[in-house]
Length: 243
Image (cartoon, rainbow, N blue to C red; front, top):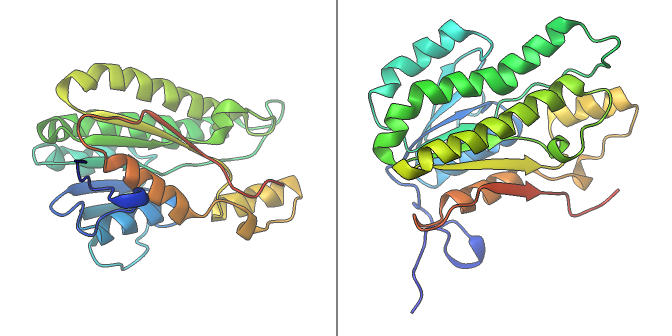
């Protein structure tokens, strides 16, 4: 006899698998963040979608405008929610500003550090009481740059290395309380960010050859749907078509 899980057969998410779950997804207006927010809502979760401006009007999403570079704004958003219940927190927002060490303004480094590392740290810290009550799950969207830091994106790579270290240390702290922490390392994914990266590299942008946001969202939901006896800690996803 096998145990039926929310992931169902062949990794398919059972409709309603996340019914009654409460989720927050940052970076939800486009790309991977939008795909994860919409997939969770379609699976029955009540999703607060966080972005500087509202995006999809998909059923099940409620929008919370927030600039993740604003510490005070993060506190205003998180403080009232810390006293409630929260099952899933997904950090999908990210910022990449191309530039070499020799030429990039320090303000570019500060901005990437703020959005890619400091904001997830502050938001997680503020919402831990709610997540602990629900024995929830925390997801950090990292990047394949973690294993292959390249010139011209030093600030981005450094902030993502910091995010990985934070996720690992956080997991060690909160696992005993029943919380699970997942780091996701997608390869190049069809998105506005990748279109800009390709333009900066002077390379043709062929989104059909890249990962699709829905591919990453399906993988994340499958990981979140595991029973409480299992935890995926690091999820690496690559485009099937290799350039």
